[in-house]
Length: 198
Image 1: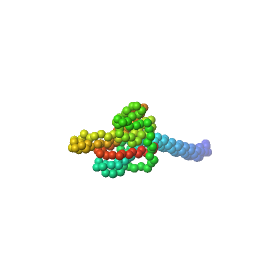
Image 2: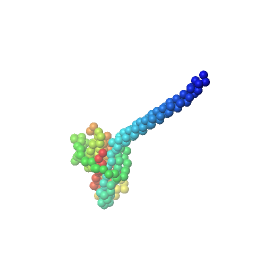
Image 3: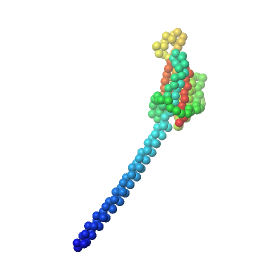
């Protein structure tokens, strides 16, 4: 009877630690795998969101050669336009290749932007036109004589102040869906636009 109890006491301490070690080892290994899977899932989601954000962003620059005083300035301003939220902001210069400007739009003799026979809006010059996703993205200028009272003296003297607006246009399914002003300056001439390739 005494020998049996001793044997049992000897077997239980030897058997229990082995089972606990195996269980702990399995738990740690399973936990590590779970953590790796979780990290990989979040990284994949972040990459998807980042890719979508970049796809909705159009980066471009505007070059103004002459200012309101008619002086050669060669001033460049960099922009970023979000096609999803319609938000526009200035940015810093970024390296990249300029996208070729090509598309079916033209400016008519009546100073209208036209797609085929359909006139969409007023425009004097197309600085850029190209596809972005499922829509057309355009940068145009629209010139008009200012009615600002500060400019009336010049207008009466025979020298009306001409204002140039630079506009962003988005055309989808042959319809103008966005018309957003980027900048507008009086007596400012010879604008150029450059859009970075996606």
